[in-house]
Image (tube, rainbow, N blue to C red):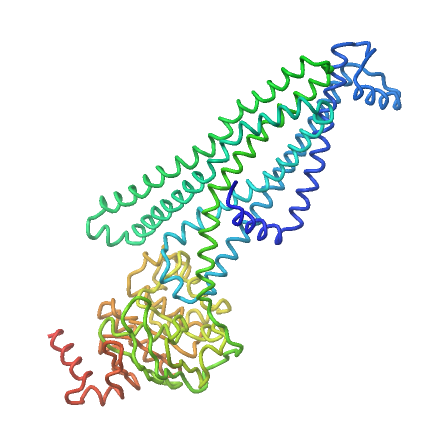
Length: 594
């Protein structure tokens, strides 16, 4: 049988959350079972009438039906018996449609819950979860494996329905002719035993199916995200070959997996029919009434495909269980690095932010930050400068709470950051990263994403402060122009200024500019610098940069080298300090420009 523990986990999670839906399903199954029983019983009087229209020696079932007809003063006839059989079959079919609807409704309700729960769990985790996860695995889980879990649930729910149907189809013939029914069921179970041994194979195929789907999705995600550099390097063929190699590997795995599931019922059906026919052959040699044998045979012929479907469902669940286990594994990984929420609500910055004796190391790497002590006082513009890899962006991640230090404290208004509700602080931050991601929507919606209550006047004021109002006005649709995926329809400088306007719209207490001008041309850089100078008059700013021109107006500068602060002080003082690090960097920068 399938992995019992995993199945129990699925049942516990699904049934506990959707009791009403499953109660409705059970009620429908009862009605369907009753209509199925009536349809089977309706065969007997019709067969008796065909064998003997005078009904001189009918079966016990026919006698009961005739008695009911007489109560309503209705004379029995073939048409009456025939319409009774057709009517009961029609009711049974209607109930099967309603059951299918209930199963689908449960399936998609659960899928919505699973996706919502997974995303909520993921976004409660620290940034470590996303930075350390395989993005292809995450995307494949949400796009493909969660629907597979829905199929697993559908298979489980269908199994419940089929068990009830099977019980009905076997209970009546067991009452009518227990010997024939027992013989048929015994043979059917005997023929089905070898198929149960395929569960382990099905599970392994399911695991390989998911593994290859993860690889393919990762390749697809990477080449689509790197389309610009692929075209720039002229490596389209290599990128396509990589994606198609992943695709063909997945197809090879999924063909085996899906074929096995489909083959079970096809191979088992003839054996199940053989069991029914064999039992019928033994029964005919006895003294059973032909009309009752017809009802038994009808029930068995209806029951055997259900038994085949049960075997197929068993294999399907084994095949799909790895999908559930992968989702559970991701949720567990996210839960292990869940952000620790404090109780304090942040309203506004009163004093400033301090990093005290901070050490930090990324997993599996050498120490990134050592004994970092810095202060960002309210109303100041503070700059972090240093070479690439010196730890500047890691400092911003610590301030944002995206990373947790190995030792030391991040203090917000003198209180450890962990004691504050993280989002209450982050909602008062304007953050502009080096690669500003714009959403595939209009400029207006990109701005409102950071502050939904922004008025038209506030939108244009933010654009003006970011030196973006001019070019936005010149666009064909103005502020309602769509920017394309990740903002590809705008230049790098335009994207950066829209990202700055987005950060400014919420009138942040702290504006973080993480290498915001590093990839810009001199004209765009100057526009951003002009914006920073305007904003610095009434906002606390942390500028992360390696260009000296970007930080020339900073009140205080921290120079990082290999994860340590090697120099700090006002820009003017450090820039003229003989033998100083910043002074040397300025000279090197000047020589490069010349």
